[in-house]
Image (cartoon, rainbow, N blue to C red; front, top):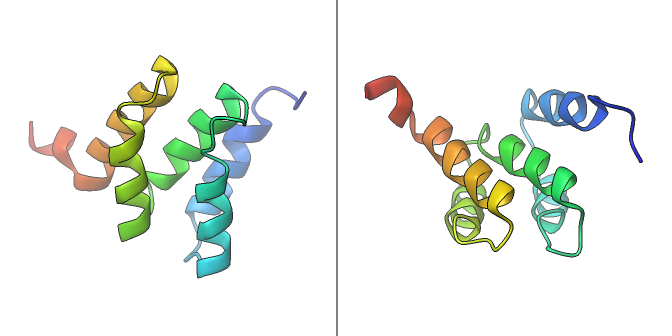
Length: 88
């Protein structure tokens, strides 16, 4: 189990960098349902900070995730990515 806040800090750190394809591929793999919900939510939030087509595609798919926290995080991440909240 990770110390409180560690996953969020790691996600924030990753979102500040221009990601290369292997790193993005790894992040996308961490959205797999076999991962814990907490990990998936942080990764989804991180994907929302990236202006990457593959990130957006995965976020759209995750809006229908059976884990409500993941689906909610995906919706929020898409809003962040598109700037929807800033225009409402």
